[in-house]
Amino acid sequence: MDIQKMMREIGARAKSSARLIAGAAPARKNQALVMVAESLRNSVSLLMEENRKDLEAGKEKGLSSAMLDRLELNEKRIEEMAVAVEEIVALPDPVGEVTRIWTRPEGFRVGRVRAPIGVIGIIYESRPNVTIDAAALCLKSGNACILRGGSEAIHSNRALAELFGRSLAAAGLPGDAVQPVPITDREAVRVLLTLDGYVDLIIPRGGKGLIRMIMENSTIPVIKHLDGVCHTFVDKGADIPMAVSICLNAKLDRPGTCNALETMLVHRDMVGSFLPVVLERFREEGVVIRGCPETRAVAPWAEEATEEDWGTEYLDKIISVKVVADIDEAMEHIARYGSAHTDVIVTESHSRAQRFLREVDSAAVMVNASSRLHDGFVFGLGAEMGISTDKLHARGPVGLEELTTQKFIVLGEGHLRK
Image (cartoon, rainbow, N blue to C red):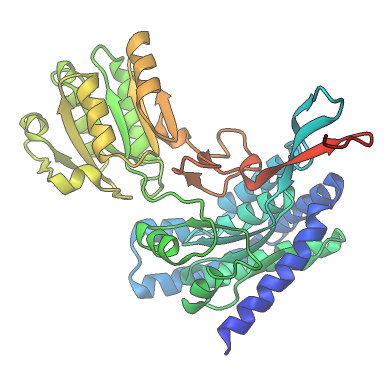
């Protein structure tokens, strides 16, 4: 197989389709998305059967329980995909939105409007729902997309992409606007990263190794996040039941996600009251504690935390715990070891909450809330392409607006430059 030729053909078809999608009426795009949601609900058995092939292969390969959880499709998750698509339908179409307009002294007007980026390449691992989320967001924002999911989800992703393509065609839109890479050979990824004549943006979703490889090899701009080393700082005087519930939810709701709690920081004044309660609850839930000396004095059964633990994204039922003197030490720890993803303070102090919001430099900074809330669906964006920890163009959940660029328009009446 000539992989370079195959990928160039995919890129050419995507670029040709992108022009048609960019000019598609909002009603036509929404019609296709409604059909996608209906097809998902009507194809549960088929999708679960294809997904079962991936799960069985994953077990044979020895994938971790966290990876298998990411890979699994069940009725609930398929319904969640359909609902996410419907939420995207309900959102305003960003294409053509005038974000600013002004009149120059000479009488002509200058404006800025949202426009599609073009062709977006999405490279992701494990989660088949990304196929639908990514395709739906790209369609609504007027972009074509090339989807390269992980080899462990090849059957699930093919089935989902085919379902989406059929819905596009039924709505009178080009099916090539959503194209899966049909092979698992890693060379296809390397070729995709160099198709700068066809592809305008790369968005990776996966582990640090994958994203590092993409950053090092792509000739195309990349929106990325590297790690989700998320912190929750329990401040002195925090409401203990609330702090316990926030920390438990942030760690245990889905430990294998990038917005799960990885390091809990506890004010020294809370060691005698809050810390024993939350550590015992974690122990009951089977969470491995890796703690500082003060933590282990409260919980001798905890493992000793190493320097490496403070910067580790576990993606599992493991948590590192450190006692700190005050908010300054907590923020210093976050600045040193964090990944600028999601950081939380649990506090009753308005002034310290405001300091935390101002001084912690992360994509999402929260007060008295679980880090698991940092998600495009939960934020009301319909779905997301991922959570960006970049600072340019897109930061936080990458939704519809983040999948557009802006261009200038000029409205004149024969104006000339003098």
